[in-house]
Length: 522
Image 1: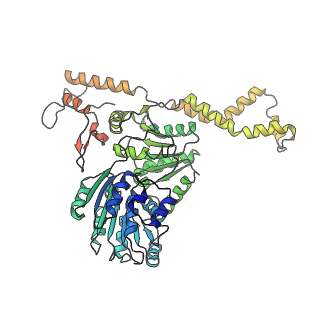
Image 2: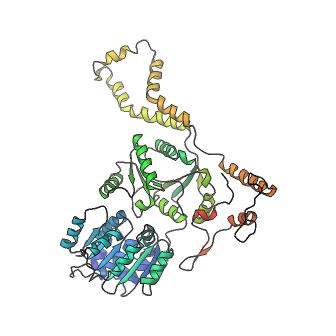
């Protein structure tokens, strides 16, 4: 199938050709024919990266009347970065039409956005729910001609607290409307929204993949959480050409990690919710232009952002659920290129690996961090390589090499030393502090975790049977009153099965907490 099979107008086809879109993705081939019809509400379960924007953007452009200079469609997204990306994509799709879009979002000046709306007379409004609702309440935005509402990344939008704002935007439509929702998951509040506001919607489901891309080399390193930053620093030292996104769990983790790595002279940027929009834009610009080699961010801040040619994705700990893991690591290994996904895993979370592997239907490689010997060698090679151009110039020009006259004063301090002694002085001057740092911390791998886990579980099981193990002989019981020990053990080895909103069974729980061992483990 090709886009030309959808009976699209030539202006949109020309834009798709320029964007080098020829064959539709699964979500596009399912959604576009439905949305080209009149009066269709749609619920689509699809992850980021499946081509959702074109799936709703193409049919939307066919429904807009360019001669009517008022807002006819509203697209809501959960984050400022994703809203900006949507605007960029819609501008590309509408390049050869007279249809105009406007972007409104928090973190940018109200007055400029008001001016863009009043003077630009846009047909499509793209924005975050909070700012859109503010402008509706101020009567800057009028929806008297609006007939289409698109909720993109709806689950994330409601997760970050926009449920009430979304409902108020829905109520602000003055005409009968069509609603199109795209969401990776279908939690209860999404189901509630569907029941309250959608009119007999069509439902489609397209999974990007439950398994991850085979072009991604997925690895994990078992290292104690307090050493995550040191481990990341070491990985950067041995991979100088790394171009990576690093995911932290919280904004404070993101900020502190970024500050510490920058203080070490490493080229990184951060992205989190406390940053002003101008700061976020600058960070993204510097990262996309490869002025820095690493972007440190949270899931929410990075939601929907598309960065080309990432070599690595690094998780500082596993995310809350497996879908987030798949979404994160899927940012590398694209377009036939190889990518590396690295997860730093605290020993206490070692048990989660099996559940993740079952969910993605792939094995992760248990790798080892660079040893202190590896790091010392990398450090020395890096510094000597940085001196190579000077060494070459001195050897080539010999006595003609230009140097300040004070070199003679400097030289006098070394006259009584042999060449080897001079090298020892230079080596100590260049490397002593960093080598001491490596020696003090040592190797970071918690290499004994697997055996330690087995021994601990076995010992605790024996202790419970004897009534010992520091638990005062107490046995744990389930809510039914039965002993939980043997039942829990069997349950841990069974995949969690549930029915999704589309009636399909999932064979493995995506929530890592579902498989947490009942014993204290580590």
